[in-house]
Length: 154
Image (cartoon, rainbow, N blue to C red; front, top):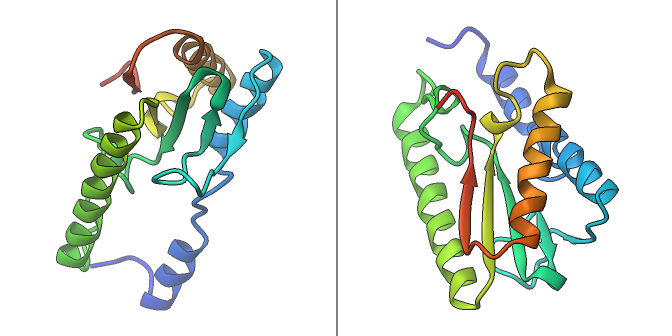
């Protein structure tokens, strides 16, 4: 049983942003301050990556743990309309895997930053964003082909 009405739930879910989320903006701001330049949401690449670093041939996706079904506590299925949500979220995950494989075929290096990586404890979000940005910088200028950043609590 949902604690809000169907109409309220619809309003809440429609307000969830898919681009320029707080996490994206905070990570981008820090990477820009570190001297990295990038393109946003490139529609000419599979999955419209959140950030594209052409000079380094690297791509960054910032995934919400719920929407992309990470294995952390943030990815629990809603209690109502469970089958619909399960189908939707499984399809999201399948699409994500296809996108990563397509990008890797084209020799792109791919980094996935999970929401829990910077929303860990919530006690000091600035420090968490700084830590994720430093790790992201290291990936961008490094030579790893693929990496995922998650909460240290996982």
